[in-house]
Length: 57
Image (cartoon, rainbow, N blue to C red; front, top):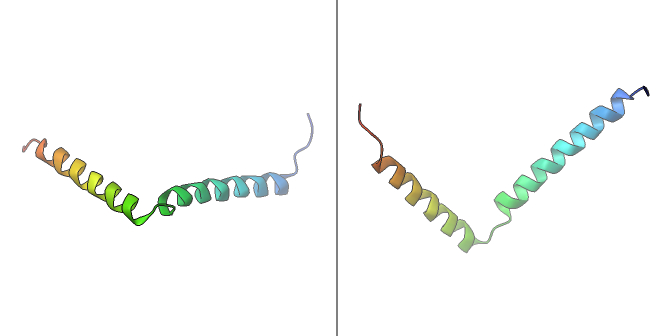
């Protein structure tokens, strides 16, 4: 078994996390205004539909 440099492993893990976060932000913030409004409207309509199907207890 080969020894592992913990400093390099820690830095590689941090780079992977930063890259994943960057990809999430690219999806989240990389939309045009029309796409954002469409997504928002869809989210609102789905939430309203879900609320209508809730049972009162």
